[in-house]
Length: 325
Image (cartoon, helix red, strand yellow):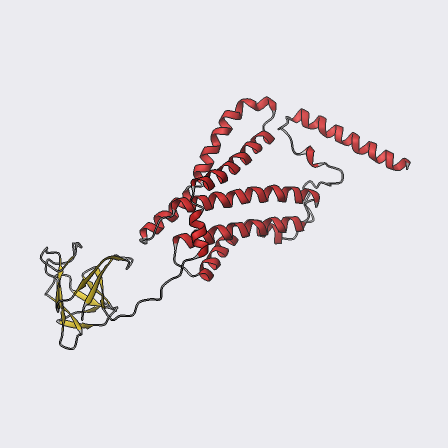
């Protein structure tokens, strides 16, 4: 009966796999062993695997310096019987033994979601989402900087590539995590997914601004906004874990939802906290204050006061006209 020997790292991931047909397999750092190990705590001739007449495999320690151990850290005094699939240690080096009749796990079918997420790694998608984010930041600069502050445009525009690079941090961490666990890094799909979530958040923020204005900043508008951001973050983290782990869909969704709720906990706290009777924050009425009053190139304080005075005059004229009717 053939034997399969797997060499494992400290995370018990397979780094090497060997198959032998002979009844004895020598293990150690010496180059004339059947399995050559590179761990400095393994002796040149550390242990040997032997097969008996019944086809069972035994691990024999060759009086090594750091010893050999079975599952549960049971020391191998002379020799010990190994079961198929059992992990043993030569010093700190983990090995796993299988016989060739050991059952294998069921074949995992392709995940449609994972395939679509990987397809998002194309440079065209990344460029599209990055362009949406850059456009939003340019619009924000135009809305906040007045004509008297136009000299600040170059400095503010230089912040755009910096902010786009910041979005690379999470994909880079997940890619390193995947490589550490001996999986594909999927950096480009992770980056595209992060840009896509940020772009969705930008568009959702614009929609919620319009909705909140027309609903006079009601609690319902605030609730819709927080729920939307939570769902966007949940989708982002679920996609991240789908590409970076082999977790079950239910587990990764639960973890993603928990992280999303944690990230939006401040917004949820503000939403669920009853308003204070001493709150004197400004309120607006969409029937009186038009949305174009807010949307436009940035204004200095004098221009803002002039536009506000003009708005008051228009409202007063409308009120007098209704009183006459």
